[in-house]
Amino acid sequence: MGPASIELRNRIFITLLVVSNTLGNLFVALGMNAMPEFHPGRILEYAAAILSNGWFVGGVALMIVWMVAQLSMFTWADLSYVLPMTASSYALTAILGKFFLGDKISLARWSGIALISFGVLLVSETPPWTHSLPPKEEQ
Amino acid sequence: MRWIWLAITVLSSTVGDLVSAKGMVEHGEIEHFKPRRIARLLRYILTHRLIVTGIAFNALSFFSFLALLSVAELSFSVPATAVSYILKTALSQWYLGEHVSARRWLGAACVAIGVYLIAV
Figure 1 (cartoon, rainbow over the protein chains, first blue to last red):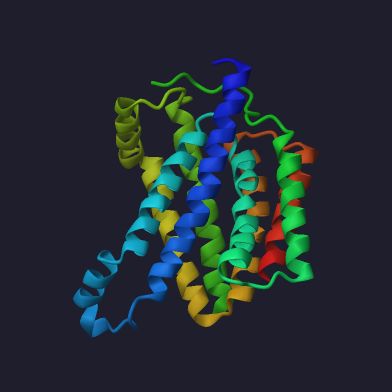
Figure 2: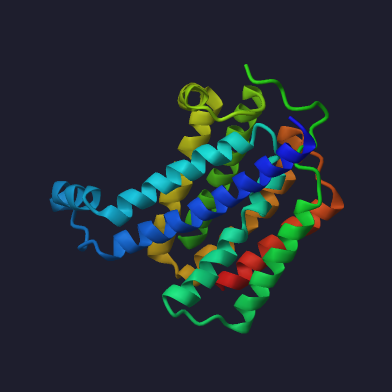
């Protein structure tokens, strides 16, 4: 794999992780809002309601995509690279909340968004893989 | 009680990510994503001891976070879990043999403080 395709693969996976994590959380939250209050005596009814809830099922599917994509990325990128790089999802959630849910963004929040973006920029300038040996070839 | 749920949330998520990453490093670099490869990858994920352990710890973290939310405000819970970025960065050097440069440390610290500020 050449350097250009390695760079492209990193960008695609980071975008995929951020989008699937942000939308997965949002969909599960929307699904949970539509659920009736939980009563232990009615667990089967509750399970049936949750499994027929499109937002919830879609959100869980996105979370599975997120988990498999993140695990895949660990085969060629450090944990200490992947985690901060994908923290943009916190900033994206705040911005989506402003546009779709009308949330107010305080000065502290804007500073948080700016700091996360700066942190992501710093980490993006470090090599993704820093182990002493190159990544193993796939078995 | 909230400090106990917070500790369980942060520690189990840290252990979960570290052991999952270790299991995936053993898999070797994935260069192509054809359907047959993806099927093989899913089988690897669901049968590898370290990765299954990692997923179990992350599930524990998820449920203890829900328990945390039941005893504490969201504005306490999310910022408090930002500390896990620092913990995972520190332990990835020791457990996974990653080289965390000053620039990456600074980036991780900015992210952790940023997450704190967004949620506080």
